[in-house]
Image (cartoon, rainbow, N blue to C red; front, top):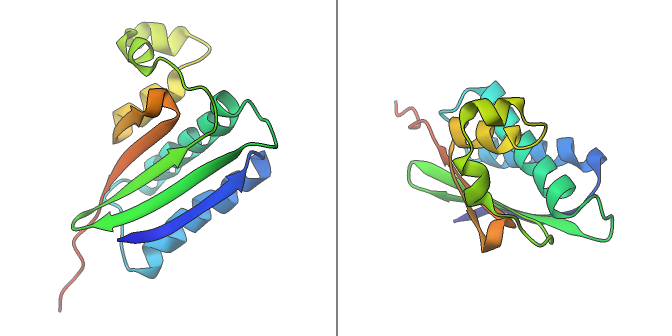
Length: 138
């Protein structure tokens, strides 16, 4: 079931609005991520900024697409950009030491470490699985 879907301009000022829209959409359906809130915010922040900065190259004429779907005990977040993509396999093959000392690529490491995620469409789309807590049944 789609619980949120929208496009946003490539503007830093939209990041908080996007994060709040995703979290509010989950909250409105009483869906609570199992992921620690700080880690969840970090995942969202990195994925959104990567789409804007690396995908769309801060081009204000390009948009990022957000889709959030709920199914069973998880939600699926899709973030897409209008960029050319990137070789995500090469980036994922770097050692931890290389990633932490490299100026770029730490965001991907953090996303992969904190979530079940995969890049699609030559790297211009990321799909992030968000495990959800079971609702309390009284």
